[in-house]
Length: 388
Image 1: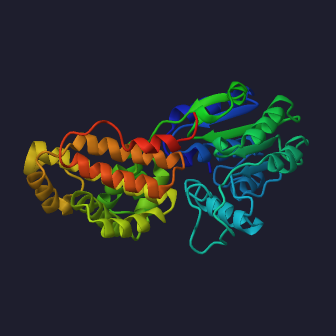
Image 2 (image 1 turned 90 degrees about the vertical axis):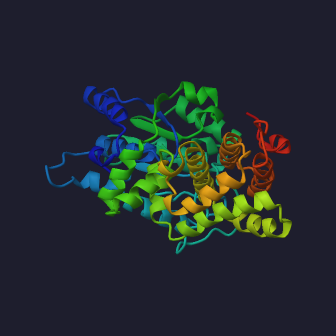
Image 3 (image 1 turned 180 degrees about the horizontal axis):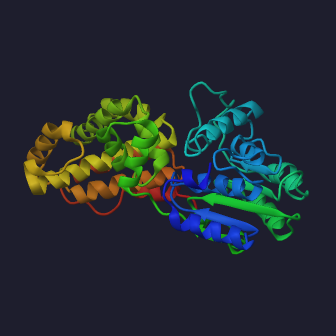
């Protein structure tokens, strides 16, 4: 990954390039912002810039090639992983990342990737104290082997267990010579304040729909209409847009949106149970995408209710269903429905059981379709949120 390959994030790139030019690269950075907006890609571009031996105008140098292939001995990349993850399973995911630095290849967002070595269980992906001490510390206390510095990229740093976080803090406080750490997270609020205080914090903004659309057209040769649809549903995340654009089941997911709304209204328990079973088995990212599709549909319903036939709806092919919905449910609290779906999507980030989220959402949506609803998803769910 080179600076020119980064999708937007111009302010971040300018800041880091000025640091490189002045020789004032920080000992530790915290890249924070939404998933899929380029934190990991920028970290890898910084790693390449730090190790570069002098690229020609047309070809990268040997050191840059090693960084790009994840083969440089002084650049280490870490992701949270289940304790039973096989070495080959991790290596396979890193190779996928080498092909596309924006791909969701981690165990958190993509616990299962078709064609890759599966993990033996459904254990949570995290960083343990043993891994910090036996892997990261062991490497980062040494001098660089052949590059200008040792660099560790710690993705999803919010997955550091308490003991692991304390062990990592000691490493930040007593670093080896010529080292640079880059931590990435979408949840800086859960990191230890002492870790935050030892990092230079750089915020990454969501990408605009136009930026995502143009990147999809340029990189995947998508038709403009397909790229626009994925960009709107991606909620500022290019990685999510890639998933949507490559999702062969996108049409099934869109049909599931209509099915969920229909079952929420009718209250047919047996059919609801089948849908809950289907959706709760999806990956966390897939479920978030499903909720994004639902949000786009409710947005369309709001627009159609106000503007009618000329409404600039996204789901144009589902216009007949939108018309029937607005005509048959004139009292539906669309704003509450949008809040409920967004709340459900947020709860996925907290790793609340998907089954609980979906059941509560279906019940609450059914109420919102019948009239005004308080701004809450389901009170019992607040009892299973982790402490903040």
